[in-house]
Image (cartoon, rainbow, N blue to C red; front, top):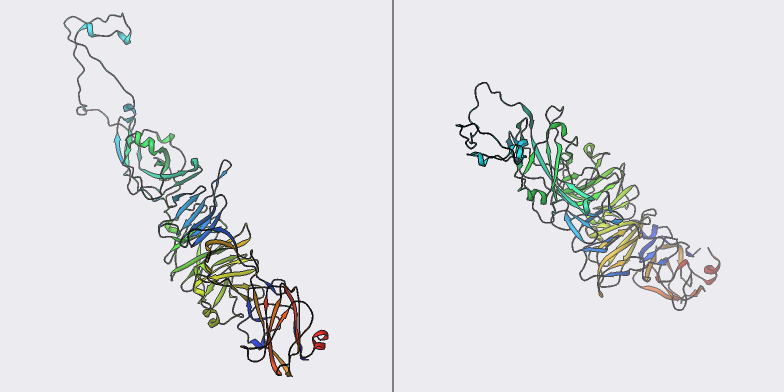
Length: 601
C-alpha cells in the first residue's frame, strides 16, 4: 500500500520526530482552526475601537465602554455594594494606573484607594466645668436703687435696700485657694481618644475608613467636666478625598480597653468649630460600636498585581511580600496578614480558595479560607514565571509561562502541560518572556508582545497552532472579556492603533504541513484528491514534497473534489504535503495511481 491518507486534522507536536507523528498531526499548522477535526481557516481580528495612542492595557467597562492605559495595569471589579439607588457605580480597583493604587467610578472619577492613618494623636485639654461652660450666664450689679431691676426681671416691683448698706459690684474672686475641709471633686472617668479619617463617595454608598491615629494620653475627667479635642491631622495626598473624621474614646469600667465610637464630623463642621470638638458625654451614653479599623493598614503605594479571589479577599504584592486584604475591604491590608517569600514575586493568581504566588524562583501556594489563617506552601518545583502577562485563569487552575513551557497550577498539583508537546529549546526559541495569554474555549491563546505572532495551545489535545497576523501588525496587549466571551487585542497596525476582537474578522490564509510518511517501497506519487469546500473562487493549493522538504515535487490547485493527476516524479520512500488556502478541507489522499486514490483506504 502506497496511499498517504489524512482523514482528520490536528496541530503541531514539535517534540515528536516528524516521521513518528500520527497521521493527523502537522509539522506546521499556521492560522488553522481545527476544533471540529477538519482543516479550517482561523478568522482574523475585527476592529472594534480606534485609538489615538498605542494601548498598554485595555478594559471594557460596563458603563463607560473602553478604558485604555499606556502601561501595564491590573484591574479588578469591586466585590462590594456597587449601586447608588438604581445607578451602577461601576467601581474598579487598580494597581499600576498611577504611582499609587486607585479606584475608578463610572463617569471617569479616579480616587486614591489606600487611606493612610492620621500621623498624630489628638490634643486633649481637660476642663473641670466643661458641662457648665456650655451654658451662657449673664450677671448684673448696681450701686444705687435706681439701677436695680425688678425681682426676677419683672417690672414695677420695688426692691428695698436697707439704709446705710452699700451695694457693690460682683468681684472676680479668681477661684482662690481651696479652703480647708473642701473635698476634691470625684473623678467620673479616665479616657483616651483617637480618630480616623473617612473617604466618603457616591452620597455615602462608598465610605472607606482609615486605621486610627495614635491614641491620646489618658486623661481623668471629673463630674461635670469634659475634654476639648483638637489637633486633628487630615492627610493631604493626590487623589485622596477625605470628607469626615470619626472620633473614638475608651470607656471606664468596661472589661476591655476598646475604643468606642463617639462622634462623626464632616470637615466643614470641624472647620466651623475651629478645629475643636468638646466631649461632655457620660460613659453610659457612649455607643457600643467598637473601632474596627485598628489593624487596617493602607494598601502601599508601590503595591502591584492586584487580584480578587472568590471568597472576597484581595491580594497584591511588593517585592517579595504578599499582601492580603480584609475580606471585602479592598483598601485595608493589615501588616499582620503579610507573608514573605524567598524570591521576587512576578504575578498572583487564584483558584478555589488558594492564592498562587508566582516568582522568579519556585512558586508558592497561600491556602486558607480567611486571611489570618493563610499558610504558605513552598512548592518543590523549579518553574519560575517568565512573563506576568502570560498568567491565565481557567476552571480549577492557572496557566503561566515557565522556562520549560506552559505550567498548569491547581490547588493540589502542578503539571508542565507542554512537556509532551515541545522541548525546552523549542519553547525558548518562541520567546516566552514576551508571551501574553488567556484561556478561551479550552485553549490557551497567546501573543508575543510587540509582534504579529501568537500561538493557540489546545489543552485537551496538547498540540499547538501558530498564529500570524498581517505584516506590520504589533500586538501590545490582550484582554479576555468573559461577558462577551471573546478575546480583544490592543494593537498597532498600518491603519493606526486600535482594539480588535480576535477570531471575528475575515479568514486568515492557513498553512498545514503533514508529517513525513515513510513508505515500505519506492513510490512515485501520481494522483491526489482533496475533499473539502474549495471552489474556483476559493481554491486550495497542495504542494507535494519528497525527502527534500525545501523544494516541492508537484504543485496542485484544487477547485473541486475530483482526483488530480500529478506529473511523473522520482520514486521515493518519504513523502509529505502542505495545504494552503482558506476553504475547509475534510480529507486528503495522495497515492501512486488514480485507482489507489479513488478506492484505497
